[in-house]
Amino acid sequence: MSTHYHFVNGERRDLDPQGVFSEFLDPSHTAVVSIDMHAGHLSEKPDCPCPAPRGREIVGPIDGFHAQARAHGITVIHVRSELRASGRDDLLGTSPSAWRITFPQFTGPIPGADQHALAGSEWTEFVTEVLPGDEVVTGKKRLSAFYPTDLDFLLRQMGIRAVIIDGIMADCCVLNAAFEASNLGYRVVVPADLVRGTNEELERAALAMVSLHMGLVTDSAVLVAAWAAAARA
Image 1: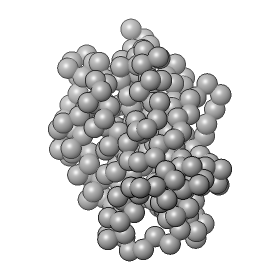
Image 2: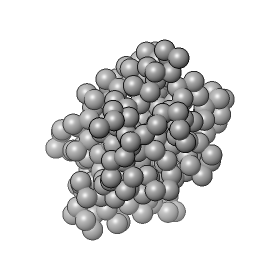
Image 3: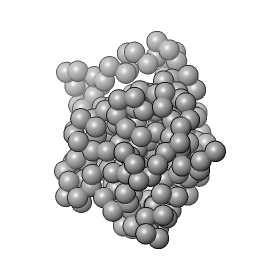
Image 4: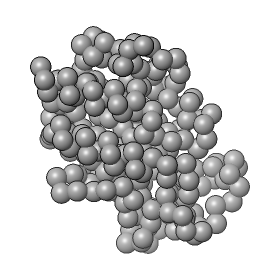
């Protein structure tokens, strides 16, 4: 079986790095966009305001992947949710986030949700490694990494045409970022081994949607191999 592969609606298929997906795999115009890998989702403290416990298992793998991306000259951009400490961006605003109403219908009450992503709190601290040379995008106030942040502006200033999206949650913020990146004209890649969803079923569904409508779903090892091949060419 080929070491170059991708997933289409969950089905593994061979991938030709020089074929139709070559634009998605060219490291020369690629950035990694890592979403919401901060303590507000990943802390093991009992008062974690919006826990995404499945995301904890990818902290180490994401750090390792980011190290390989940097080694190939690819910039890593860390995106975090951050609301004004006053609460006027959300709970005290005219239209609080819909997830505060809808998500608890599935999970049950989230006791500390009113503290989620407040500026200056411990919950906005990244759990994954942030190094000099990386970029940080803050001010994500809803589900998309592009709203209302300067992510698109930054990517265009960097000459980026392809984005690799990792982080959490696959069926929420990762999926929203993939939709918006694709709508803005970026080539979208989601490494299936470096995202986690609310549960496995929703994760599979989100990745299937990306593979059918937005971009390339593969594994991080395939990306690293493609970059290494480009460096040898």
